[in-house]
Length: 166
Image 1 (tube, rainbow, N blue to C red):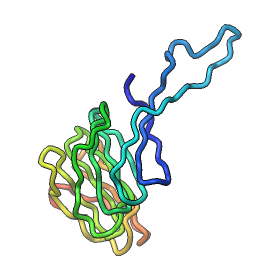
Image 2 (image 1 turned 135 degrees about the horizontal axis):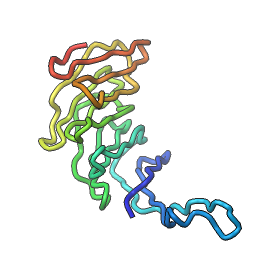
Image 3 (image 1 turned 90 degrees about the horizontal axis):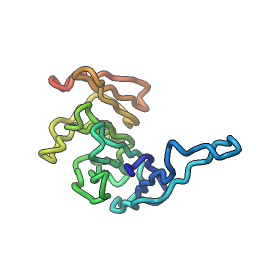
Image 4 (image 1 turned 45 degrees about the vertical axis):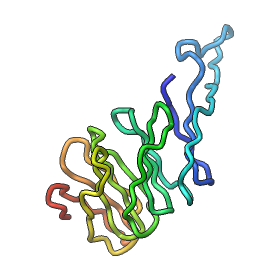
């Protein structure tokens, strides 16, 4: 069965579980709905500090995790195998997000920046600066060339990815 849920622990690990019951067989003979029976599938270890964010890629092939250890980890969603560690932020990372076609990842950090990472090339393409405090979250617009970010500086910024400007 395909992974269906990612579970975060207070330990610097990521756990992937799967639903083991048949989706068409969720009602017993008395008409009561059965509770799902999730089973641990993989325990992904490698971060050195707390995991703050974890997301499946839109294509379903990858999983990305962001951590207070200043790194982003790329994992194979089918096998749990570690693929790559993205390094570049100077402080912990609070959030990460996928582009619509699973080609890019953006990350939000306490270093007041958003970074855009190329998954195939495994490198940082751009660093977006302008926030004046911790950046807590980020997201790609699924239909355009924009990223949105939110910060402790009490602003929401919309970034033009091609220009690298807010």
